[in-house]
Length: 345
Image (cartoon, rainbow, N blue to C red; front, side, top):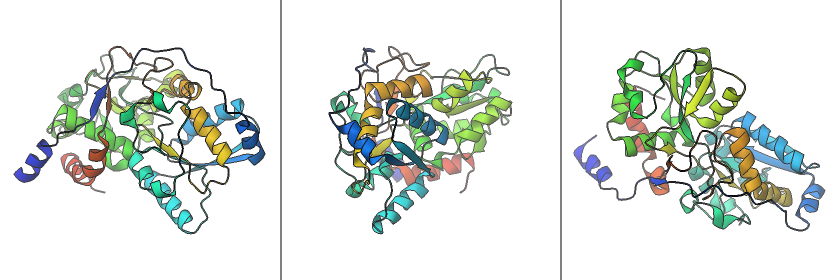
C-alpha cells in the first residue's frame, strides 16, 4: 500500500460501530393486521429469491407454514451476484417472479432500490438504526461470526481473534472462507482490518490457513477434523452442535461482526399480501425468536426477545460495518486481502 492511500484510509473518521444489546425483554406476540392472513391465503403462494443457506431458509419456511398454513412458499436460491443479475434481468423484461428478495449483502439489495416497494414492519422503531440502509430494506435475519473448533481434537480453543495469529495453528490447522465470497465474509474482513489492525491479515496469513469458497465445506472440514479451528458464521455451526457433531463456536472478546441481511418486497410482487405477511412475521419478536433459538442467529432488534445462543448480551459486543465504507472500500481492500493470503480469483 502506498503512503497516499495509507493516509487516506487512516483519515477515515467513521469506522464500524461497536454496540451492545439493551436488556432482554418479554417478547410481544405477533398479531397480523385484520384481513392480511385471509388476503395472503387467497393469493395462495409466495416466491422468495434468496442467497441464504438453503437449509436455513427451508427451516424458516417450515416455521412460517406451521404458523400460516395454506400459503405455498417457493424458494429460488442462487449465489449473491447471480441472484442480483437474475433480478435485474427479469425486472428489465417485466418478468420478475420474486415476491421477496432476501440477500446477505445489503449493498446489493440497495442497488435495486428503484424496483423495491415501500415497506416498513409494525415494529420498525425497535430495530437498530445502524443496521438499516434503506426504509425499504430490512434485516430479517442477522448472522454473526464466531470462532469454531473441533471439540474432539482441540481442548483449548482460541478465545480471541488475535489468537488466530498464533503460530501454534500454523500449517493448515486453521481454515478461512475467502473474503471475496460475499457480503458475509467481506464484513468479517472489514472487522479484522478496522478493529484488529491493518497488519492483522498479514499476521493471520502467516499461519498458512487453508482457504475455502464458502462456510459449508469449511464447517464440514472442521467436523471431520481436517481443520481444527476456523472463523465461521455461528448459524452454520449451531445446528451441527445441536445434532451432536464435534464442533462448537464461541464469540471472541474483541467483538462479534454481524451481517444484517437486506430483505425487501419488489414493486412487481405478484403476491404482495403474502410478501407483507412474511416480512411482518420474520421481523416480529416471534420471527426473531425463531431465528435466534432455532437457527443460532443474533438479531438487529435493540432489545432481543431472548438471549442469542452462546451470546451474553451484558458483555459481548456487536460490530456492524459502516455502510458507506462497506461499499467504498470493497474493491481495494479485497485486492489487499488477496495479496496478503496469496489468493487470486
